[in-house]
Amino acid sequence: MLLAMQGEEIERWEARQYLEYRMVRTSGRVLWDVKYISPTNSIVPDILHTIYLSMLKHLLYWVMTFLEQHSRIEKLNQLWAMMPQYPGFA
Figure 1: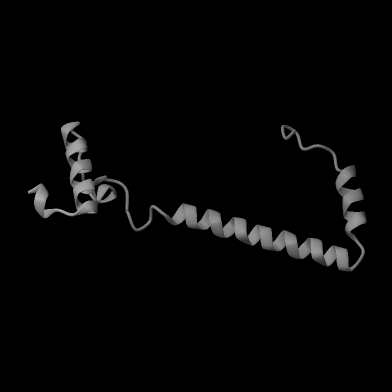
Figure 2: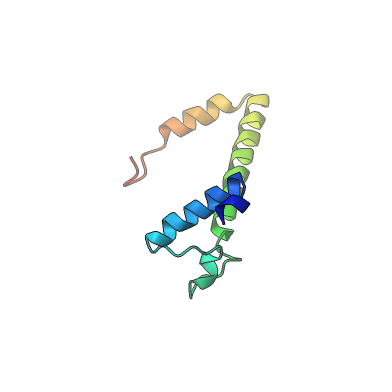
């Protein structure tokens, strides 16, 4: 059987044998077997997190550029320095 296999196929076969010897189930569809997980929706939180981070980065860049163009960045820095600390956020 090993003679008919080539390079990558042999590595996959050896990896599968290694896992099966240790009683690890080799399945390409792990999320489909979990009762309360929908594989189509499991990636949504990560996508939303990435989109929100990108939007926030873009918005902050735009605001800082706008303030710099209108010579207001120093005023923002002064106001920011005068703000009291938020309780429990140090």
